[in-house]
Image (cartoon, rainbow over all chains, first blue to last red; front, side):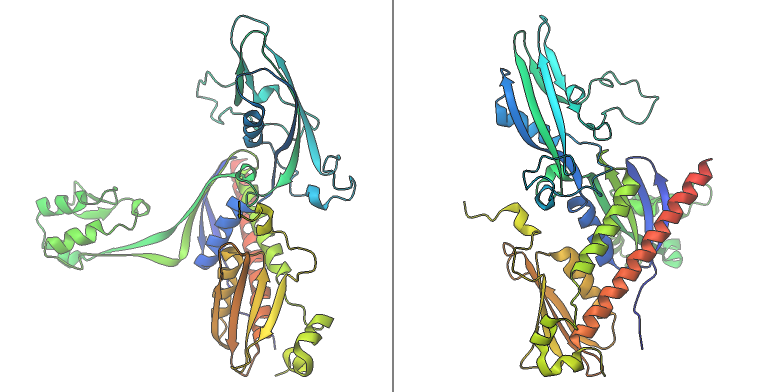
Length: 320
Length: 117
């Protein structure tokens, strides 16, 4: 009896680093690709500082300014998926400060020297060694980066100025506030399908071919120096502007090339802020989308179903 | 001043059901599902999956207002099926599809790791 209209998506990873992931997603619908994109950006939970108690602040920035900046610091959030939201936590009577649903940070800095003191994310002391500010060190060890060991700058202090505070980090999603977004950028594009009409292409002189190839704002085509033929060098550079098509029509050769995006083939790029690894972010997104769809199921056979359907209950419950 | 709180976008208040179904009085085998605190992320996915079912004559979704956080999914089917059946079938197919995607992705990542070492 069970029909199924399920699709069977395939994945091919092109590039996989800790904070960057590029892969091809095939045999699925654009709605799924877009839903995953939206979930990665807005609904994958992370940890971020949510409550700041300032004991002393004689810096040039005011209290709420510093609190806002602290909230935006990305924290390593690998345990975010298992943690509870503060509002759902029974342990702490909704106070939102217990060990199960929050992490405590302290910052205590005073400038004592003549030089300006930079207060950075390295000065934040965490109560949990697994949840710390993401290091701003790039992952390429070859790059000599002067700023490597400094961390994210919070505020600068002059001699005699002090900053002392306690901060609580909680689990949240970017739908609530953008500080909880684990993603730097997430994009997907339709994979282009490019067909050059060879017969029509033959009727162009080399000069005309060059002109046509150059009319594209991005380098999609190229003239092979040996064969003098126009070849597709980088189909994914095509941004679906129709410049080459318009140029072909202007030159009197409509139909010179046919370009369309394949409807079920996508190239995804996922970049993370460092809070969660890029691949883990995508997996979390799939889980969250699944649980959303599960929450949206309508349970018939329950009391409310009977209430709504009455006599038709039996008919609705799957009888033909 | 009049803006709703941000958590309203995803927190279902006490006493409200997440999904409600209303039969259409004027048309046979048609009905509308009102889903609270969801947006295009879920709406578009469910709608496109419903389109794949040949028993579904009509499937569409809308957000009645961008500041009211709910979606309405309207479904009409042939007499071979019913809106609720089609809806539940669509959801279970999506669950299977996402499970398949998850396994495919995990095996790709695992393969990548082994290719390195």
